[in-house]
Length: 186
Length: 186
Length: 186
Image 1 (cartoon, rainbow over the protein chains, first blue to last red):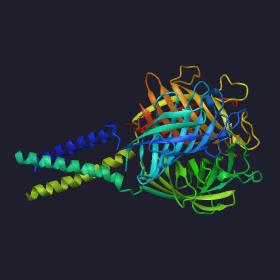
Image 2: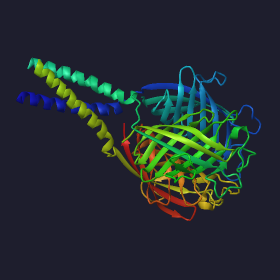
Image 3: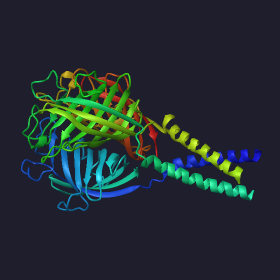
Image 4: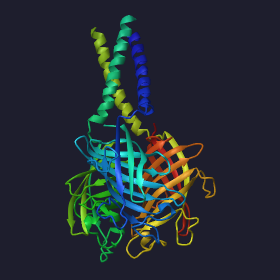
């Protein structure tokens, strides 16, 4: 049995190493288990566009009103939104779901915002939700936020979403492109 | 040694497969490592109930006030809350903790909200916190949101919470049932 | 071959146990894969300090204004902030990044708040973001919140952050110490 014992030991050791290596590989490879690209469209209420608006200011600093973004790079403006999500950059494409949540501008010196929202997807391809939070330094071409959870088809998902401002019109409309890379899929 | 080498190889291969299978099983089985059911009770301030209220509006769109939910399905109303958590559906049962956070209504066409909150549990059974975010489409019987983290007895927890409106009275009181399923337990 | 079969079986069983044990060890050891300590500095706008303020109230309950924290333990006050992060407790140390997000006070009976924010780090040592949410019961010496995600150098991070009020001056300035322990590092 002696040789067998040695075998077992070395195999144990071998698998122990293998197990450790495998555990760490899961982390270092950084290959998404799922990729998705969506666009969402935000039309902010300005006092005149109640029919089309998908977002409204609900908070603002002292002295500001809720139909006009503040000066100071919109510092202190807080909006809640329910925006259509599309597969391409056309506002009028059939929506595959809604982006629902909030953003607020948190800096006086230049534009930067913070986002907390969900994608509620309801299409032939996907039924479920993805939940996001993160800082949105608007002046950078791309910004990374966290996908912190998901439900339905995105059960327990985690990942990183790279967002970019695909277009904007004055202070009423902007369109975000969201490049979602999930690294934990169940 | 030839046969032994073959054995080792096949065993390596076997365990490699086993390891891969096990890794994926962790994801596909979808069996919670912990289940919990709680109720929480929200009494929103309406200008007359300061003694009992556990929530108050702190944001609303232009033209609205903070003691009355807006028309338009409460679109734009933002509330912060500190609600008692109970083990059954009785508001007067001894609370086992507090649900603390915010919700806001984000759609004009029908009721839907967004939630960001924590369960701060402090009972003989549980001491710790669970943190939640997610969309809350109130018109659906059940809604899934994400458990994105935890502390104390819920250290590093992740999961899905299925919420349902257990009862409501006018526009002042509602009770949510929260069915928590954790899939990552430390 | 009989003995070999037995060997394989017992080894399979052995590794199965080993695998299970290892899987659970990953959870039970609770040793951070990364530790970080930072301070951040919040100067709330009070109507007179626009030059220095790093935070402003943007929401408050009925009857309150946005340049003065409410009575009732600030119940209902909602602030957004963009605070400098330093490596030591000196407000005037060179910042290594910005803490950006919001907090609100959610209880009438005593001080307690809720936090949703990001660390946007931009120094020689770290480039990336960490995202946090959680309850902040201010009267406790230390409070644990969740690190729910990260990007850049903190790609996909998860963990627990222990926060403590390091200092405060009246109702205008407070400094939080944040002891970050990551338990999932990629």
